[in-house]
Image (tube, rainbow, N blue to C red):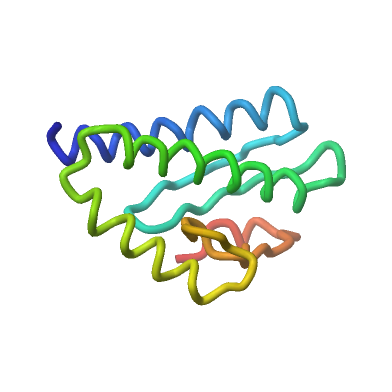
Length: 118
C-alpha cells in the first residue's frame, strides 16, 4: 500500500477517536491539527476529566495504529516497530511499545491572543 494512503489511515484513526471522545466522553473540540509526528488539539472537557479522556484517547489510538502497522501493508513496519520498541525501553511503565509521549503539554487558555499566536 502507498505510504501516503497508509498515513491517511492513521490520521483517520485519530479523527474517528476524537469524534468518539466528543460524542461519548464530553469533549468539546474547537480545533485540531494532525502533523507527521504529533497533534495539537484545542478542547474542553464537559466532565472535568480532561486528563482521563486524553489518557483514554492516547491508549486507544496507540493500540489501533500499532495493530494497523503490524497487520497492514506498512512498508516501514520493521523500522516503525523498532522505533516504538526503543522508546518503550526508556519508560518502566511500558511493556512493548511507546507510541505517544507520557506528557501532554496541556495549557489553559484564557485569551484569544493565545489561540491566534504564531
